[in-house]
Length: 86
Image (tube, rainbow, N blue to C red; front, side, top):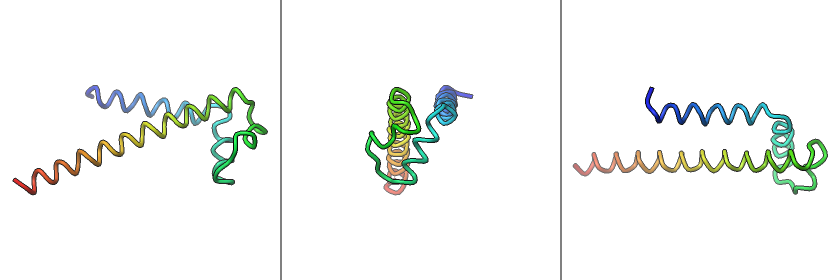
């Protein structure tokens, strides 16, 4: 296993830990049910400090995977175009 695989395993473990943390599923269910939601509407099932932490952690995960998707897509396209032009 190389360092890239270790990094991915570490990220996967962080996500699993986040998903199993208290309050995360309630926040995701609320967003799934209502789509967009204001912060005040989310405070019912989850305490305010927990809500803030979960939202920040979820945003970090979304940003990480968005970057990984873009980087992989860009690399793939570069490889394909390089081979086609060769």
